[in-house]
Image (cartoon, rainbow, N blue to C red):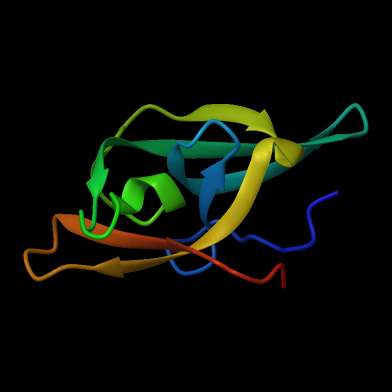
Length: 102
């Protein structure tokens, strides 16, 4: 089971899925004994830097264009929680996965 907590917000709810997608948690639901998250996925993602390796390889990315459509997934499909920092223009965000699990 995941050893971190998420909340439906930009502060505590930006997550990295096992598929590599970055999303914002909008709701958490318990249904038939399973925990689901409702989320919005960022549609654009690129590396934050390219040297000495593309940062996307270690899941450090710049994201933008939050999808208006909500999706849902099982909570255990989340790989880790992320820190999400707005960039100057306010339309893009730098995303860094947490190195620890709490």
